[in-house]
Structure formats: structure tokens, C-alpha cells
Image: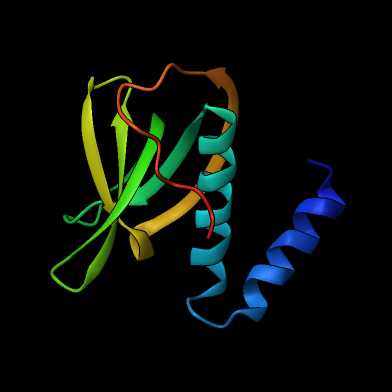
Length: 109
């Protein structure tokens, strides 16, 4: 996607007014990576306050305890990880493809 297309898409998402700008951009990037079956580089704040960056396969969202969680497969740790959406600092799609282990359910609605 060209930078201008991505910017226009992000502005469209912001106009919905349902969640914060950062969350919309994070979810849009995750959705695009999921659609393209590409891994992501995700940086997030852990519960202990530390910041971690990892490469992961994007899979799904679920609500639990009043929070929206993003679920992915952490490639280095070889396991499922979940992140509260508002603790995700940044997400970037890589050029690395993956074969889904489970259904990919991160499409934009």
C-alpha cells in the first residue's frame, strides 16, 4: 500500500470515533498483515511496565475483563501471547509470510 493510501485509510478509520487514533492505526496495521498473511513486529508495554518488541503472527481479538485483547503467536517464544490493545505501542507489517496455525480473524469490519 502506498503511503498516501495508508494515510487516507487511517483518516477514514479515525472518523468512526469508536476508539482512539492509535488503537485504530494499530488494528488497521494488524488487519492488513493478517489479510496478507505477513508477520508483524509488535512493541507493547507489559503488565510490569517493561516494554517488549517481538515478531508475531496475528490471529484474533477477544474481550475479557472489560478489555479488548489481541492474540498472536510469538515466533521467538513459540507460544500464544495476548496484549491489551491500549498497551500496544506500535505495530509494523513485515515481509515475512506465515502459514496459519489457526484461523486468522483480525479482518477489519
